[in-house]
Amino acid sequence: MKKILCVDDELTILDMLEVFLCAENFVVLKAINGKTALKLCNDEKPDLILLDWMLSDMSGPDLIRKLHRGTSRTIPVIMLTAKGEEEDKISALDAGADDYLVKPFSLLELKARIKSVLRRTHSQTPKIYKYANMLLNSESRTLTINGHEVSINRVEFAILEHFLQNKNKVYTRSQLLDVVWEGESDISDRTVDVHISRLRKKLKPHGVDPIKSVRGIGYVLT
Image (cartoon, rainbow, N blue to C red; front, side, top):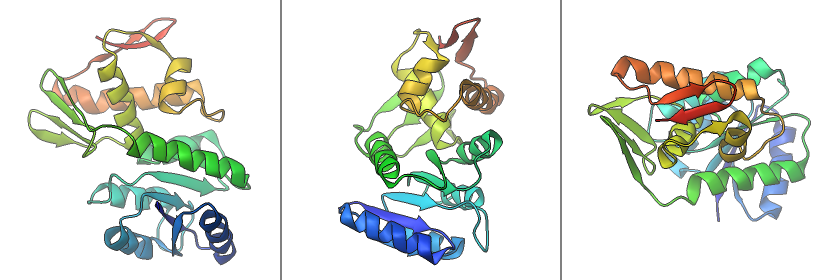
């Protein structure tokens, strides 16, 4: 049974999530603040985290960044929050969130999002991709260039992994939405551009810039 950690400072929401997720045969862990969540991640190793943005001791994105600096960086995160502006979504995804669901949300949609994220993050056969002086490890979710680890968030990792699996093939923004975000309706083309731009900025200082824009179409890894 998969373990899901629910992090929210509203006890009514935690209780609602617990009842729903237990009925769906998940083991549920609960935390009302970031400090407790970090401890549970270290002790219990949950398979997925449902995370509110506004916590009493830190923000949801700040908690994700703390997780990504330690051994819990491979745990996927779905943010559940009332902050629904595009800038908020981009900020959360850039911090490393795997998905973003705006409150109030449908429990059936939440169930579908959970299954989608778990399928993406737990069903892959571990692989190591090589490109020039770069190594991408799908098991440890790490990127190294010239032997030095480079920090990229989970969405940037998924984009880079997809392109390394499909070298020299041009992808439109719509196609990238389908394969990286599995066609989620609330993710825009601009979000794709932002993540690819930030990924390229992280790679360029290390002498690697494999993803190129194709005018009027999309992107390609050459």
